[in-house]
Length: 238
Image (cartoon, rainbow, N blue to C red; front, side):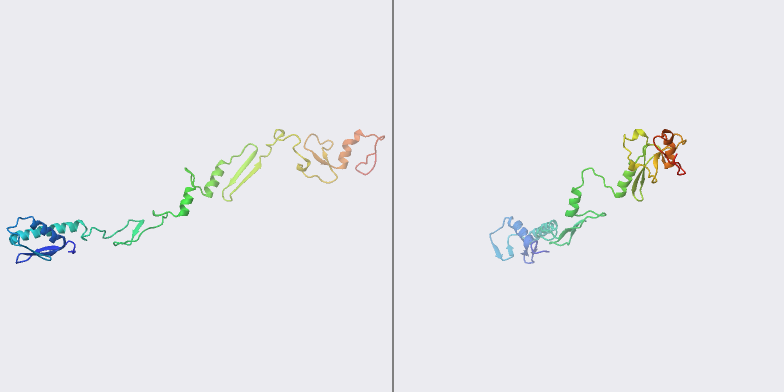
């Protein structure tokens, strides 16, 4: 038993010996009994109580030892009331013993733990109610919003990813074009030495690239010999 708890022992000759708390408790109880005389000899840790019989002394010693043992159990057996060992539950870890080193493991996707400053900054920068999206999620969201119209056809290709647009054939009329909006640069390319028009006898239709002879056929009825000579397709002037 640790020295601070001690023990109380009554010797065959009636002498009380021992140490620590047990001896002090026993001495306190025996001192409470009225003594037949004042003869009390103090010899260090040895006290003699002449007026008490040995059985009374032994009962007092037994009670003192029991109280001291109970106190020792209450204090964890150490007698000093201190901490005997410190442990930890993950993510808290301890090296154990009376002077442990306490640590906490870093958090991961599988277990709880401490958060790094970088992780905190990233988390704090996310708006409340925000939803995590990958690039694929964003692409799918865009693809779901793509809708063609009567004049423009839209197509989203997830594998690329890419978005293409094309004018629906025949969907553009005069109502979709601004007055004067089509320039010569936007017209189809023409062969050299031709003019835009419709050949004589071709009827109504799209413009054609007319040769000089075709143009002459158009204007010839309106030209007289008094004003100009026009060369026909054979190179002859008429």
